[in-house]
Length: 117
Image (cartoon, rainbow, N blue to C red; front, side, top):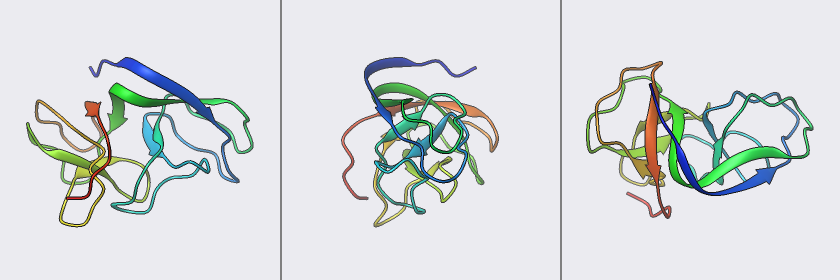
């Protein structure tokens, strides 16, 4: 089971679509584009238009894993649905993992500043 230790949180207004928790979100309350930058990780499922949805900005965050899974030490990027995937060249690096996860698992992602791969 994924754990989290948030060192910094904020809130975001969810955009025009409902969003699933434990996924990366942008500043405008939507999922990032594949490989795009993210504001943080939405902690809980949130309905469209919610004003104060909690977002983890920095620390260890629970994030659902996308297709292909993750290997220990992978740098993590977002897919187009906010799930954690292995970063490739040109992706924003949103964090890293210290163990392997399969698609559909909830990973503990250690988040940090967002350089590109």
